[in-house]
Image (tube, rainbow, N blue to C red; front, side):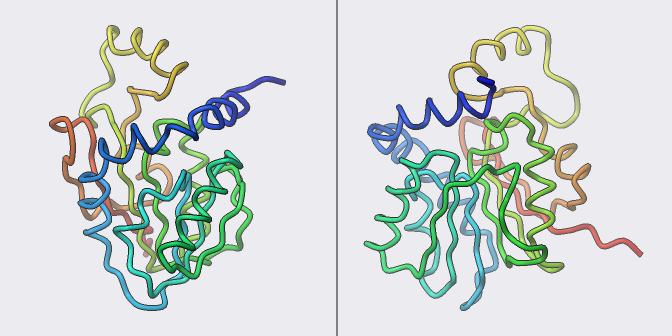
Length: 208
């Protein structure tokens, strides 16, 4: 069946040859600011979900164990080449963000940049991030979000029918999604276009 996941794989395969021309300069500062808040330590096991062509890599330390996944095989190939050029100890695999093929409690850091507004079921992607993060792990997110205080207006929801088909959902709310998935937000700051794009750090909620 031709579903949203299939469409995402197809469109990003088509985008891959020109993706860097659009996404690198546009999101460079936001990526740097988002990753700059992570508490990096040598030897950490790090997963980039929806890694694309590896545009996050210049802002990540080299002394880590790096894993990258993307739904699109063409993106994975370019990520692998960039990681090699930059000197990372990296593994790259084609994988659905909603079905991560990693064991529980496996990673110290999970990065999800420009992912939650694209995948069909962001709650499933966050549940998987929660599962593969260790108890003290950090989830690093940068994406566009509707404000948390109220739902999107009818006009925004109507526009979303178009934007979601072409590129991205513009009605998703960060904190409700994260809290429902078992995360506590410890850092939340606007990074681009006023407060449209936000960078967040979240940790697993520790229940007594």
